[in-house]
Amino acid sequence: MKRGGGRRNLVTCPKCGAVYDLGYSRTFACGGCPSNVSCSYSKCPQCGHEFPLRRSL
Image 1 (cartoon, rainbow, N blue to C red):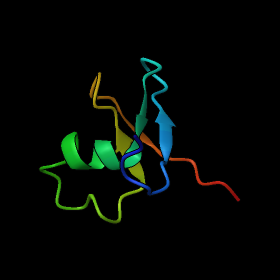
Image 2: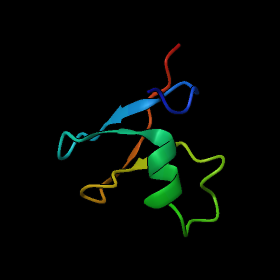
Image 3: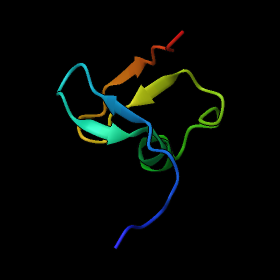
Image 4: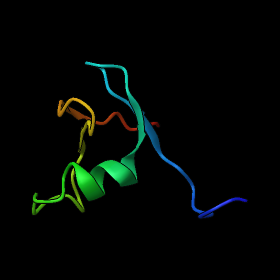
C-alpha cells in the first residue's frame, strides 16, 4: 500500500552519508528554526550537520 503521493526531495548528507527527505528534515531537525520555510540550508536528522543545498539549473 502506497502512502502519501507527493514528490520526494531526497538529500544526502555530505558528512555522514545519510539519505533523507528534505520535508522530513524541515519538520523534525529544523523544527525550532524560524526561517525553515525559505531556507537554503538543510540539517541532517541523523548527525545534525547543517549544509547549503545545491540548486539544479
